[in-house]
Length: 455
Image (cartoon, rainbow, N blue to C red; front, side, top):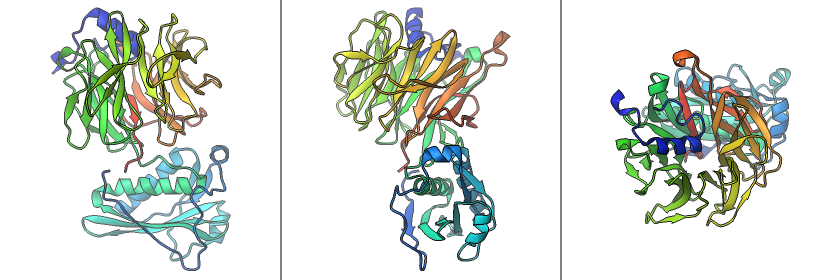
């Protein structure tokens, strides 16, 4: 298989793609449905808070994580569910899980108050053979009132999904915004020597668990991107030694070519409605940006600057596109109408900018920046103001927002010594304030892309 790993493309094409992807791209390349939810009401309890009616803000929780009692739901799979809920809440940095024994009936709120808790979870897991019923209640320790009660029923193998859903409910009810734990990250799994790495399209839960390969590694594969509307990925593959964009159906495993362009197609990104893809196509010494309608496969060219125009990303409403271009002499970020036309430069800091991606909230654009031989990862407002660097390193790139826009996943790589010794590449996450960076247990990996919340 190793004879098929190294792409055989003309040097000029490789140089153009290297310029578009940055250091990492060519550096050595030589739940489904079925979850049912039923409300649980507490006798004598006040009505649950309205969605979003939270007493604690995210900013307050960053400074002082919310203490929450999370008793074990039982043994076996029940304990596994408890562990995932606790890890989701604890790893986001906004909660401080407190272990305790499961109460019989109504919790002892006085005891919980003495622990410093603000909230508490109770519940139980009932094994129904091929399915699980997980009863979950969320309590306000200060008032002693139930603020959420739901029983979730799903196939036994979906226990992890139930745990993520419960963690999302706790996050949402206590912080007043949607959680993001019931989501996935697609990425590129890497193995083998640095100069001839095998790359596989892979997918995992957002916490790094349940990872699985989607492709066999025969061809170099890069830049997966989720369709926000269905279970589909766009990605770049060197299949048959010709770099082009393909679509991968996560339900069937089927792949199909996205337009047979005369040049190399790369850097795909779906429109917010999932009905079209925007991507780059090489042309002479540069590249142009095209859109492709997925129903008709009709294509439309929307830039023709004569430069390298690449890495397009839609605004959440689909009206604008941010992209990277060297039309001004160096790689910078530009915004234009999704239909094309005049583009406005928005990046003016020191260095070269790339990998822009629009937040699902619409308020920020994340980017990578290269200056003085090192990488930075940052965010700015769509008009270019308020630029902030979140983290730095030898290589930090490929940012992708979680569904609620509060956290970024990205690729972090270390430098290599002789013969590639000491080189490492992995996926990290960081809050949009630069708070709470942590590595995901995904092994050697790059090119993350965060899914929408699982339906």
